[in-house]
Length: 257
Image (cartoon, rainbow, N blue to C red):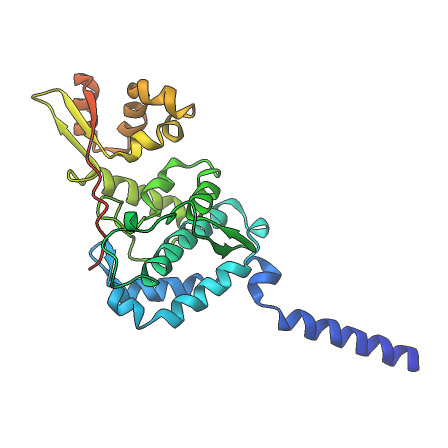
């Protein structure tokens, strides 16, 4: 009986230990609902009401705690992709809040993308490193989902990304960004000129499957990637024209609403 009692106590202690660890650490789970709630409350026209978010920063920090403890290796691919995108956008929001209201552009902050770190999935990571983890999953549409808190960035989505809906969400983001003539894509048929976001210049290789330097000089391959994501009539006109490509100026002012 003593031996049986000892085993029972041991099992109980193991159970208590497992229950005391955050679910995220045990199962690779992150409380995406918290990020969704924050967006529902503070998203405005593709940006954020940072003043309102500042008053709700405790909820943001609770979400980021789950992000820091999450085990991304246990997630299937679509869930990983959603996780890294949400983590990037939430960390950007936290970094901005740390300096708000005395910030008008992320470019004012040295190392904003490649120097400042935050714990994500158990590691201290820069924003560039978080973005790279998303990019490594092989879907260039991630560039229209991660938002660097700047005016020329793609609009912040009004909901959290989820593994179950990531395909539809990314396609909607891509088409919406390309439909924005101020920052995504503008076609001037008369001049035979296609104006594209600088994102296509900085990450050209992601859209062509090759070196970014080579892809930059082989812009036709970038156009080939774009066509399936455009309205059919516009795609046909661009394909027929074989336009030259220029890149739009990038507005780094804060996406504060």
